[in-house]
Image (cartoon, rainbow, N blue to C red; front, side, top):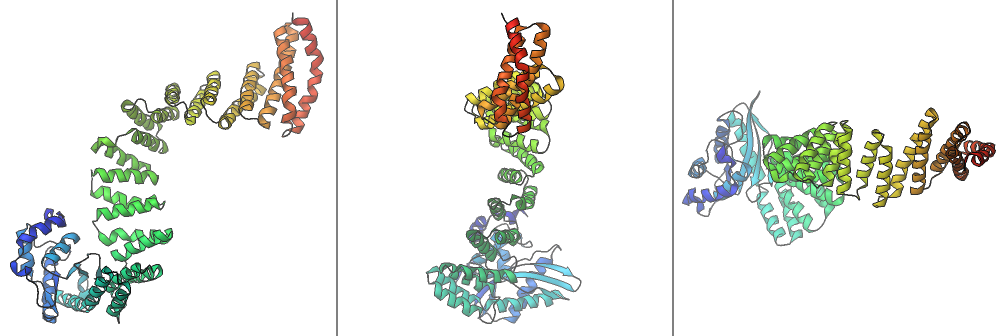
Length: 556
């Protein structure tokens, strides 16, 4: 099969020397039609079917109307260039061969055995453009010659539109679009499914900027020939232009099957799915491409991006790892960051950390990789290494708010409250939006307040006050003020009781300052928590005499 995989350019070059001089002479007869080996799973059946169609067509036509290119001419040309004569040609090579043997038309098709005998599915294509063809009726017969005879008759019927299509094509090429419409309609007279002429009618309507007519004719072609590549490409383009994504997607779904083996077309379709925001529809196509073309760097890169966009992370990781293996230039800092992100999305934090570590080994100063590393380590439960990695990420990019948030989260998990407080202050100093930092400080204050209610520990109360004051400084809020007032009241109540027992001036001052702080903040907190704030505000005067007495007695 290697010869069939050669490019059409190579075929043009080699066959130019192999073709018989007779073939180079201008024909004085009707149009030439070429029948090459049909596709078939049964060895030899494609060759037999092609010869049967040639034989039947030669019997049914006059050379003044149609000339069938002899098998010997085709075989000699193929042999001279090293191509096998008993295997089907690729679409591009079939077109090139048709041009070389001066065939204005050629047949492409498949032949299979059926319960009724033999079945032939075929398409007559004009050599000028391999995407402009006519799907012929399915031919079935008890014998091969019976089916071949039906194909021959269909070729003759289809050929009636060719002359008019040529006139239309020439008119469109000269910008005479209305003349093209007239010629195409004349060629289609009596046969609305004359799709070769209908394709030229589409061209003429495109030139006249009659979009609705373009859609109507292209859809009519598609209705009778669902895999007509010309109609599908035309509709995909015009639906995209009109912003009709739903119809565009339906057309794109069919497009790859209209030109099987055309990798470039599949890549274009995949790109269109991605642009339309439906990368998920490209996934099956992408899987087939990579499976049928293993190790192709370009396809692996495309697959990597498609799978990521479609959130098919398992496939993305497989394609990405292989891409980096076959093309090390693709292993950029961004690649390792995305790879770590894919592992994270898969719920594999350890793998994410390892991917980030591999990236850091190559790009030690990249802040994003340090952040991914910290996140992966944190999710894997490796808290101290996660803190170290997060600090590196912040140091590498002091303006990155996400780095501070992650560092604060990890420090919270390790109960490193003093470090967390400093982290929030540093974040503010480095330009992180205070409105984003305030909720983090508020949460810490709220957590500490709740802990103090249970523990009755003044350290928890003081921690709550510290973070709540920071939160209110970053962005004033009723919640912060109420919790600050409540925490201060609790601290004052605890300190005043212990000050008397321990005869401590420090505790007496602590109580005095705490009740003052509560008095300042509780009224504002009462906007949201009126009953609770009022209860605490009314309770403060009950402690005032004792506090003042303790200050006088114990503070020297």
